[in-house]
Length: 441
Ligand code: NDP
Ligand code: HSE
Image 1 (cartoon, rainbow, N blue to C red):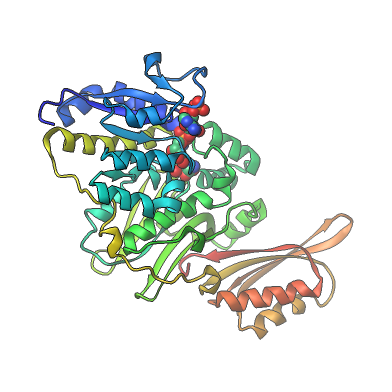
Image 2 (image 1 turned 90 degrees about the vertical axis):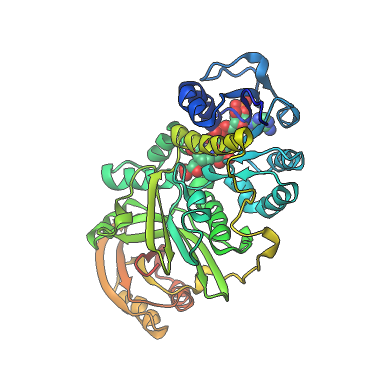
């Protein structure tokens, strides 16, 4: 493309992220042109509802409600998918890759579930597929894993990868804001998914961890093997109790390779010691820690959601691909670190088996013998208690007790067996809250 006069971008989706990309193309035009060599231009835009007013002004003639017209348009040099969802996003991206067109996507749900098919199509057609914005917002984790860290064997990647949940937990802990109000704020600020239950149920973080694990460990990951728990059961009392013990509560994603025998990918709330750096990663910030034998532990931190950071990540990929189109600058043709067909699938290790320390909050009727009914099954299953707090209060005319314990290190299955036994006694007034402690997460 030696005579390229401009690089044409086709946007599929013009919501929070799509509008952000168009705004950045407009506002940073001079910088982008200087860095790429020619201007970037938005030449086609697909939306669902053509009558909706838009936050960034573009020629109405560019808009279509048929996203395949973006893929097919010869003026579109790079397809940018910021629409979301599995279908028709999958068919659109396959169509673009099969034409050999470079693709940038922010769609983690799509990559977590259909990534293998897309990576294979990209490789087969020699088409570039970039997805930096899909994980950790503006944090350049894909580039770092495929570039700066490419010489390392990586066995652990973990961190905070959902801005909405981190924002909610931070607002609850620091300002005492209620869960529903904090979620509404996150939606207004453009952090949440179109269906916010995907965020608060931990599914979005699980999508990101599945993509990260596949990339970091050079192994395909079945999304159905990822264990997922969201923040719905975390109440202000847990946040206060955690603080009393010297911890904060975060929704954590953990991906770990156990030699070459198994891989564990899980997402769940976790209690983080307040003096650990990740405990002070607040609001919509994300943090991703990567551990490698030679390089040690690195933590990358940055805004994990929202229009500006996500548009910046998308356009970073666009700029990289555009440079490749304009002057043949080196752009890796591979979507992963290794050819997709060369990877070996490792058996999944279910989260329920993972050892750790745990926070337990029991809500019981307040009568003699309760403490023994809680501690005996735990002891019988080898779960040892490190510290304990009991408080009393009245609920629905009945005296109830909240008993909070921190355990020593215990097996996940042993704990589950003890909790099932306690549940069978009939003294619990609401389901037991179980939160893993970090440090041992
Ligand atoms: P929005 O819901 O704000 O925007 C989605 C856009 O896609 C809208 O413009 C919508 O059209 C359009 N669209 C949806 N379905 C179709 C369809 N079938 N045909 C044509 N257009 C369609 O989502 P976001 O911008 O927040 O997110 C987009 C993607 O980016 C998602 O994959 C999300 O997970 C990802 N992402 C989002 C981040 C964020 O902070 N918001 C951060 C990182 C990734 P219309 O406007 O007419 O409704
Ligand atoms: N809904 C996502 C989040 C957007 O809150 O992290 C960024 O991927």
